[in-house]
Amino acid sequence: MVTNDNDLFKVSEAGGLNLAVGKHLDFETTESHTITVEVSDDELKATAKITITVIDVNENIAPVIEKQSFTIAEDVLDDAEIGTVAGTDSGVRKITFQYDKMKQDLTELIKQIRMIN
Image 1 (cartoon, rainbow, N blue to C red):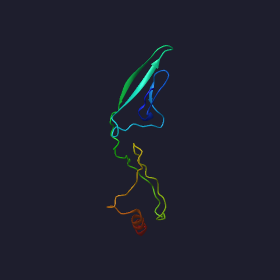
Image 2: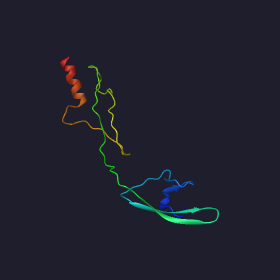
Image 3: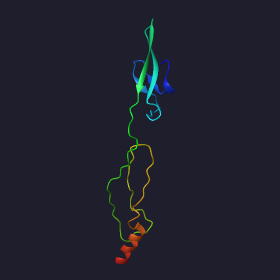
Image 4: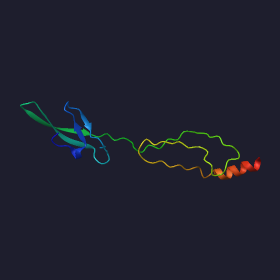
């Protein structure tokens, strides 16, 4: 390869064009990249400019959390772990968890269960 936009790409000896290891594309930063590739036999060579167009994808997809249920003994301590809530994000962002503040928090619910029994 004669020119390589920010060393983003690699071309194999067989002509395979790949994204270089550890590199990534970002449509919002650059919509297309141009590289110059050289081919040769033992006597002659030729070059060509190749344009790689980046297609935008929606990276802002909401995290996913499925309906889950846990079983808990009525005499559980108020700081005991009941289970692990599972959620995933399609991107690389860290997800955080919150419970619905309109509902009673777990500590209050456990106190009420103890009062009933």
